[in-house]
Length: 434
Ligand SMILES: [Zn+2]
Image (cartoon, rainbow, N blue to C red; front, side, top):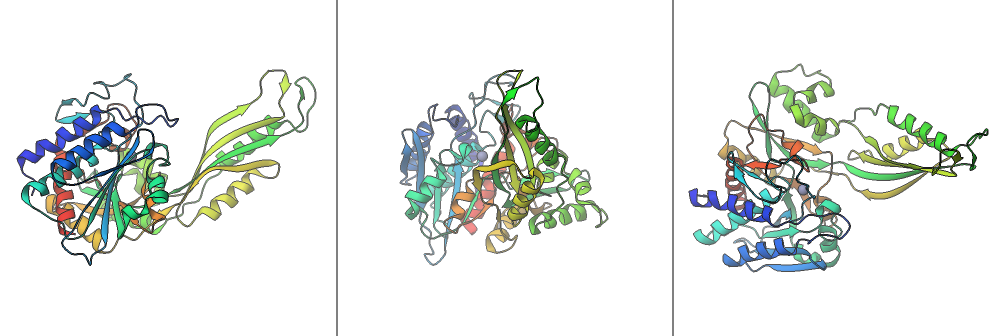
């Protein structure tokens, strides 16, 4: 297993990666992922793993490598992490966000949990294998990706479209936003493995009407029509729709806390502390208005008014979502989809799930392990196009009081050193045994 020397190595790699500013501004500005990709390829080369850097555009670099397993009859496992991070400005940070400071037993900086922690864990494990002459049973395909924070057009989606051969034989994948621990009020510790993701429907709504003087009557005022429609949409109480994943999670939490099985879903979710905001969004479809635009002068009624809606639908509930939105908007409001991506859901069963649970329990025997649905999306959506079944599994044993989900894209993003070392040990166990 990973010994004390490697304990430090995972932290050092995480710190090194944070110090390489790979901010993704979404508009092609910035340094891209090239420097981070070269660092990763260098770390792999040092332990004899030949990596390929594939650029989708200048500096938008992806790193691919395959570690050949001992049993060629087994399907390959894809282990992927993104190299880009969302931008960070220094306001409100205790340490500069790209300093990779190690203080208070944490590595601090942009990417510490999203997701240079996992990138570092993967590299630490592979380097340990090289030193100890370990080979996994199945082929492990490593992918360090560009552009996740802007939808993967230069990363996962581009690779799926242009280099599907890199993923030959991969049946399953593990990556970000799952495998972390949550501590409940009774001190029980649960690890949540992501087995589902909501889909997304980003919508542009437009109302049109006669332009004219603001002092005169105007029966078809576009601004008024849009605001009315938004009022109906935001007042709507979306009904609870429990997918199998969410049902299993709620049953597990209720059981762990000894709650009445008839406790309403929203009340069970409240027991998850800061994570409740995210898990609460997976009880139902949601449609959040995020942008508004109309008019140019106070005494001129404009001919059009627009709004953007961040719509998120549960697996199996896309049609219901769209039909509900259209009914609430009513006639006269144009609705266009500006971006769409699929929802995902897979069962909490099978050999990989068993292996993830075993690897966690080997390092934390008391732990409960449950599936959950992510309210957002990850690169697993792109790989689903190749038929690859993806899970969120970045194992982290976290202190009870850490607002983990609040650190994604937040200030003072940091990962405890102990959690990073724990994660490297669990990942090592999983990848060797599976
Ligand atoms: Zn991420």
